[in-house]
Every structure is written in C-alpha cells, then in structure tokens.
Length: 433
Image (cartoon, rainbow, N blue to C red; front, side):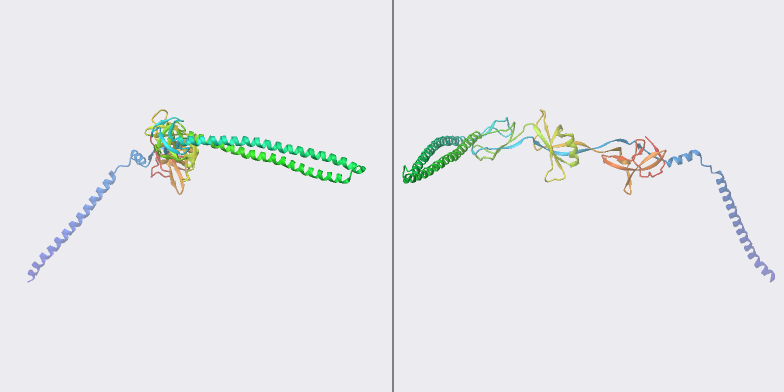
C-alpha cells in the first residue's frame, strides 16, 4: 500500500521541477538580452562622431538674412500729372446782324475759309437806302431852320437895341429940359405948370427906357435859347443820318477776323433782326486748351508758363494765357493755353487732348517706397551697419510713383530695400548685389 502511494507522488514532483527549471531559463535569457542590448547602446554612443567647424559655419550662415540696399540721394521729388483738356478755337464768335432786313445773299458755306472783311451774309438794301435818304433830308431841314433862326434872332436884337437907344436919347433930352425949366421957374420966367408937365414926361421916358432895356435882354436870351434848341435838333438829325448810313453798311455782314465758317444760322429769304446771330466764325489754326487742375498745380504751371499735350499721337506745346476758378468747381482752377498747329492738320474744336506736366513735391533724400515701414504712427527705415540691421526713424516729405523723399538719413547709409518682413532691429544681415 505504501509503495503504491510513493509511485503516485513521483510524477507530480517531476512536473513541478520541470516548471521551475523552465522559469529559471526564461529569466536568464531576459537578463542576457538586456545585457546584450545595453552593450550595443553603449557601443553606439561611443561610436557617434563630434560636430565639425564647417557644419557650425553652415548653421551660422542659415541665421544671416541676405538683403539688398540702396544709397539715399538728395534731390527733388517730382510727380507726373495728367489732365484731359478740351480743344477750343482761340477766336469763336457768333456774328450778329447790325441792322434788320431780309436775307438776300449767303456768300459762304459751312467749312469755308473767309478773310476778315468778307461779306458772308447780305441783307436787303432798299429799306436802308430809303432810310438814309430821309435822314439826309431831315438833316438839311434842321440846318435851314437853324440858319433862319440865326438871321431872325439878329434882326430882333438889332430892333430892340435901336429902341433902347431911342428911349435913352429921349430920356436924356427930357432931363436936360427939366433942368432948364426948373431954373426959369425959380427965376420966375416960366410958370410952374410947365415944370410939372415936364417932370411927368421924364417919368414916362424913364419907364420907356426900362422897358426897352428889358426888351434887349429878352431878345438876347431868346436868341441863345432858340439857337441852342435848333442846334440840338440839327445834331440829332446828323446822328440819325450817320446811323442810317451805318445801317446801310451793315446790310453786308462781314467776317470780323480770318477764320472758318463753322455754322450758318440763316437762309436766303429769312428775316434777320438786328442783334440776332446769323453765322458762327472760328479761327482757322489758332487753338486753345482748356483744362482744370488743383490750385497747387496751377501755381506751378502759371510760374512755368508752358504746357505740353498730345492729340492723336501729335505733340502739342501751349503757352498759358489765363486762369480762372470755374463756378461749378470751386476747388479747381481752369487753365487756358494757346497753341498753333504750325502748318499741320487743324485740330478740331471740341476734341479732347491729354495734357502732361511735372510738378515738384518735396526736396529730401530719395529712397524707394519699399524701404519704409511704420509702427505706432512713426515711419522707419532699416540700414545695414556692420552686418546688423538698424532701425532709423525718418520723416516722409513726399511720395510719388514708388519713390519717397525723406529726412533723417544721409548718403552714407545703406538702406535695406525691399524690406523683408522678418528683418527686425538687430537682425544679422548680409548685403548682396
């Protein structure tokens, strides 16, 4: 019985021994693998090479920013301006009729060149000639009336003066007789009634003398007034005659200057009233450019006195003759410049030409606008100094067409342009061509 139990326990012990042996083997393998791995890592660490000087220099090169620079130059910043100009005839007139009449002749067509003094329109002369004849007759009548009044005035004055002389002589004689009679009465040689009668005669003679003297004054005054009135009538008749003569001349409506008939406003048979336009005349080759500019540009253009323009590929040069402020555009100044085609084709009125001119904006150091940067309301440029980017504050005096005039730099500075976004104060830089 005992041997049977021993035989049964022996397989169990063997199984446990085998399991413990396998576990010990696995633990030993893991330790060996770890040791092997540790040895390999140590070997790799020991075998890694150190960084060379060339590699260090390459790393430094990657930290340096390559930039381009420009040297500021002191000068005047200018801006090119353009404006649209309307071409007008230098002389453009709506010629009006000087007198009224029926149109009997049109001696030119639209587009024809006419010289000054050429009769373009003719009016009926019959009425004007009749009016002139009547005016001449009225003038002759006024002259006759004046001559007659002068003769009659002289005769009346002479009669009045004769009456005055007679009254004066009669008064003088009566006064002498009065003195003689008074002496005789005092001596008792003549009655007192004679003295009384003679005194009455003297008083009557004095009244006649005063009346005659007033008659002379009236004759002289009447002569002056009547003659003045008749002389005025004569002058009025002379003026009417001259106006009638002028009206007759103005039945020929002439061109006031050399030019081209731009438009006919009447036809034969129509009635033209005095003062109404009958044709439009424009100068042939003389033209003017009319354009608007800003007030500050106008001051420069007026000082320069000339302006250039182009029309249909042709170069035109004008001379500024006038300026004014347009009523509808108070902030602009209207400039007028005359030019001549110089024998070339005539520039049509109403055409549009392009005016070009240059105006100075500011004086300072000129740099490309790409060199400027701003921060908190202050403008800066960066300059390359000893391989370092240095920020310098500047003042912008003017800017035009990618160029700025600034102050705060000198011609010895190397301004970085264009300015890279990653360049800051102290950035290491290298200038390249």
